[in-house]
Length: 101
Image 1 (cartoon, helix red, strand yellow):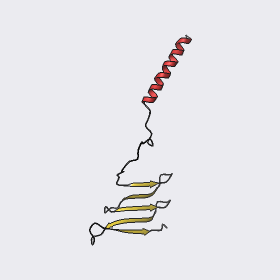
Image 2 (cartoon, rainbow, N blue to C red):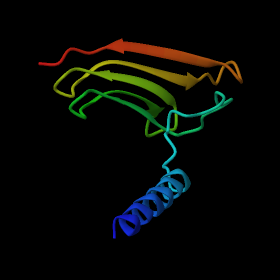
Image 3 (tube, one colour):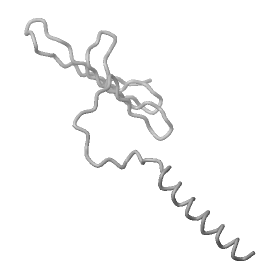
Image 4 (cartoon, rainbow, N blue to C red):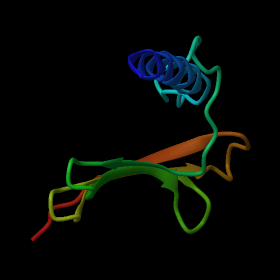
């Protein structure tokens, strides 16, 4: 009877070891090399509570913008790149500072 338990223990250990190595999840940080490019239409910066503190995105007119917010979610700084019609291919950057009440 002891021999049966010993063989069952060894067999279960081998099966468990094989399954754990075959079904192991891949860690997100385990990248062998850095990515050359990341594409997205919006990058959002959030704090530990999940509150949006900033964003790199496009405004409603399709212009690239960067927006920073305070702890309450109010805009405190914004920068927008606008296409200049007087110089084709050039952009004018508007930066503003806002104060929340």
